[in-house]
Length: 185
Image (cartoon, rainbow, N blue to C red; front, side, top):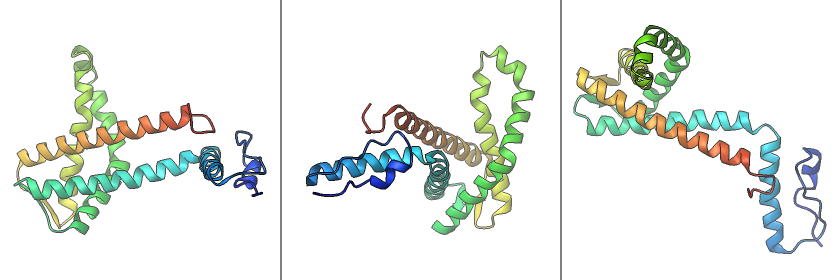
């Protein structure tokens, strides 16, 4: 006779159904995984998810900038920690100025975007990333972009990687939200 692995989790929320008293080894590991998953979802997983999303996005951006520094002739990053600093500065600038740049561009490009059936709205993140990358180049000494061509290509790569990262994360959140407390749909 083993105690329930999540008997304390019964107090967390009504979605946790982990109150059986006898388990064999296989069902114990299954119950603890099921209860941990349900407890995670019922105790504010959104804040945790957003924190993890931000950290993983900065890490993905640092890796992308590091790869761009190695492969692009016009992009120079001194070291791996410098790529992380560039990603951090870029993310802070995006947090502080990205919304303003996006709003200004959507306002200015609204009529042309409507006339192009919304195609210009796809370019707005690219333009915002280009401006923020240029600002990051000016602010961080260990990061240099020599040409406009390198800036445009780097901005396109960062926009594509960010879009893939964002879509995969949102897809994962929807999967977690649609699953029941047992982890099965």
